Picture 1 (cartoon, rainbow, N blue to C red):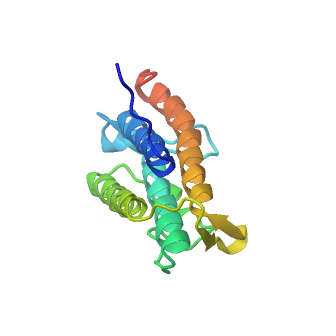
Picture 2 (picture 1 turned 120 degrees about the horizontal axis):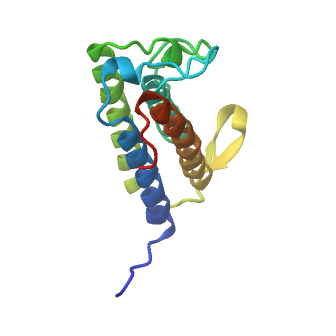
Length: 163
């Protein structure tokens, strides 16, 4: 059995893809109402809110930080938690959230496929100077953190654990 070693960019892209796929699996098979169920009060965390939050995270890091654009936020002004608070158990809200998430993931995948230099430096705003590697590792970390949250939320909804 021969294993092909991946270059740095492709290795990071593979880890990020795996975390994204894991997140999708955590949400599969749930109704809009189940996706919108809140965790433990007073938290507003729900799986649907997490879809919205991760779409916003992808948007900010790929479009704003790495591509230098100034996109509007998807859900309300920064600091208002509209990505979490606006997650309601309606099919239209679920469809909108997943469509936004898929669009932002596709943008990020395309951006990364076109840029080989993981050491390229970008202006990270209040984060200071960052390189592409910093951003991609941060995104892997963001998904890993939220996969833990998603595990607990899913277990509360229907008892499903693991992947």
